[in-house]
Length: 626
Picture 1: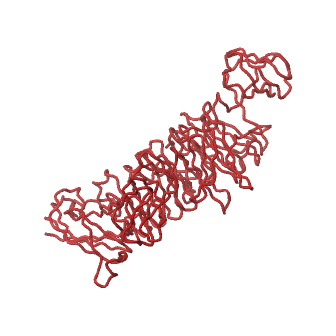
Picture 2: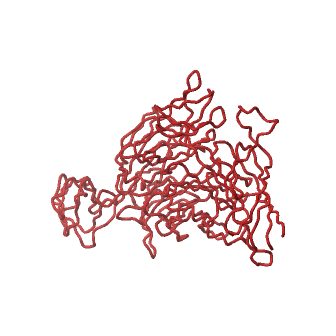
Picture 3: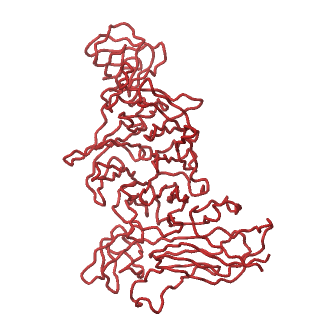
């Protein structure tokens, strides 16, 4: 019986999709795994147990997280919910303000920032500005246009006739063009503005003249504000080359508007001078509803059907050029803002099953959209939020089923692998601030604000306050009635039930963590089923497996007889009542029995112990019948 020794030295390909179970010939097979759950991939190729989630606050309902960097010294997290926004600085709630958005709007809200002003956008809401004054006062106010853009929506041939040239006038249309939502909207007759103050019928409105009208004859040259209750509001925005760029609206989904240079709220086209506003529609063989605009190397426009590049150095009405680059498309049912990752723009594909890297190639002088999730398609199912941790180089996607798909990306080192994070609940929103990833997690019907914390090994966890004796620890009201795992003085203790916001620990402890446990899983790809000659091999027997560990506190392995803990304690180790010492070195396990199921893994690590775990490599010795 042939003896085969194989060393698996890296997991850099991450968890692979089931569709690759028959592709032992691809490089990803050797560096991939069948399951990597609650695991982060290291740039050196190993894997480690993810950190726990620290409880920050209980939220009264669904929330959307938005990062807001006021300055290099002050960063804030905004939690948008039904009719309100709650501002956090670090783990502390600073202020709560009211707002005109609804819970139904939250998935579609887009945002952009300029200095101490954050702009929120939704097609059914006038853009809102959240600002922090130098005095520290926070405010929410509607955006006021210095000069708003206009557009002709009515069919050609429809005329407007004013009853006078100044003051309050009646404007009569030759066809039914006015709706109730036109109240408060500006019309422009032969370039002169009037403000609609009332509607008497579909063909007549009252208005206040703001620019003296040329006469009382029927006027064919007229248009109306591009935005408003009738036509909708902008759906996306960004700042690029000193201009505020607005993308899409309910009635003009494929249009872009550029403000005047250094005048972000002025959209007056003027005479087409270099610093004046720009407006145009994306014209192609399909409707391209603008879903996001992104200021990268060029202005990038992400639509429902394609991705576009807007060039011009600088952008002027005369120099601007728009070129379609790729045909992927972005989701239409929610806003998942694109993110910059090492100079490339990462965005979610319209299918909801792909994550693309939109990058510029100097050779082709064009953008390409590579699929980063091609080998792990099963983990990407309708992403609802995305955040990038630049410190760990982890791209997190909250998906529709409540899980978290995580991509470790180190291009120079050839590390591009996905894992999945799971908790006792569902990830609903994400945001990253200065290397810290925050999440809205739905647990037991409630919503919590939590963040990843390297100092914790449990979820929804906190470091409760203890009494003098160190046996009663309080401050756990967010876990009332729950059975929680406990780590006291660095060692796991028996689970406890939270009663009155507190737990009891016996014997006494100096420091305690309490929270919900989670299980990490490392499961390799099945053993290769073909010999060098291409013939299928027979049953496989695992003789021995060696795990090389680094700073690991616990290990539990299934080699065919169920998951069993592996003891590390040695006679020269610490006392039995001391916390378990972190183990670094090799652990060799013997195994018995033949595996006739070609898809069954030879081994599996599965452990919920709230202790550190880092796996560097695995060496297996197997026998076959060939």
